Image 1 (spheres, one colour):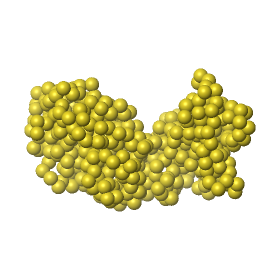
Image 2 (tube, helix red, strand yellow):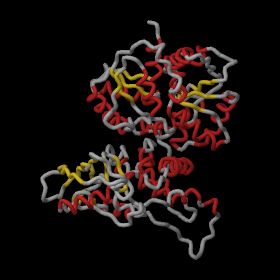
Image 3 (cartoon, rainbow, N blue to C red):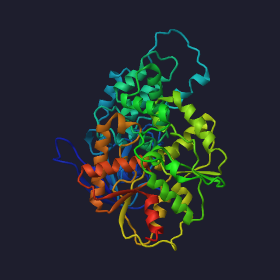
Image 4 (tube, rainbow, N blue to C red):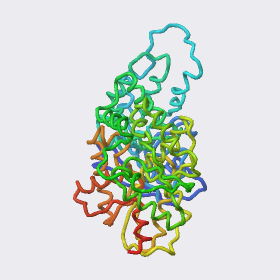
Length: 489
């Protein structure tokens, strides 16, 4: 037998939603949909839900299982599962009202708008961008999973950004889609990738819709936001996306010209957080590795790619290619930099062997050399590391190897902190709201420190904790924690 709990609620009848518990026979590879039907038969429960195709093609059966959106006809039910409706108005139980979304589609004019008559000839290469976005089955998993929608009424959400982009990239469409996208909150997206993670059709809305629509907005004068233009100006003038407030790490690190390992610092480590870079050098030296810090490296270009300002990216890529070529391995300590070097640079013809520091160290950790670090910590998954690079287990393996360390997980692993995608600078109120949610999760854990591997997340979470009266909780790069474990002090 397995136990399944279902959130029951009928507006106008029930005072509030409540969970009901059901024990049902366990069957191998039983789907959520099968479990719901069995519950109705066994208990005469009359649970309301939608389903149609049973093949993952219609999208009607989307529900949440243990907080994550799934298709009931495709996901296997788990013992102890909690089944809830997706985040739309409830008609009854798991059946939700989709009319608000459907009405908005009509109001936004999301249909092909063209004055042309007759058959239009389209080259296959001109249709590729829109083709990538035509697999949506309207399950609305993305809407239910998006962290920004829950914090901002300005943002229409990933479903609508995909819909707008589908026509924006269609050579037949004549509407001003980019400007329309900006009006619907195009620059509210943190590019966290949660929508792509839950999409049953694996549509990459941040990469194939939002970032490309932002680039179109920039070309057509509808974007970017003023704060993003300032960052572009700074990068153009200095090669860095932030002002220097401390001595540059690269200047003080010294060269190891014989090393086959290069360290790509990123902007914040070089100009504001040199202690992270120094910790990397010391930790890797404990493992017998000398690391070179090449001169001439500049901003990876991620802030420009994420906000659509592509006109200067090629120059940044070329400068970094010259700085980084020739190394066997490039190490990063910034999730955004790592994702950009791995995923975006190949589009510019630059292939590098890039590893996040956790990937490099996970199988090399030497706990014999470590002293106990008596702290209680949690770990924040940077979106561009977890979903952008697929790195989840490696940081946890490192944390669990440190003697004396008590590691506890957050309530929602992988929840975006709000600092990415240009939101921290362009839409600070959204970043602050998401940061507050992150701080509240951390408050519940009573930890001494939050560990992460992204300078942008690190600074934003630190700010968020201070605003919520949790300034005594440290926020550290995982290298700073390892440095403590290897230190003789």
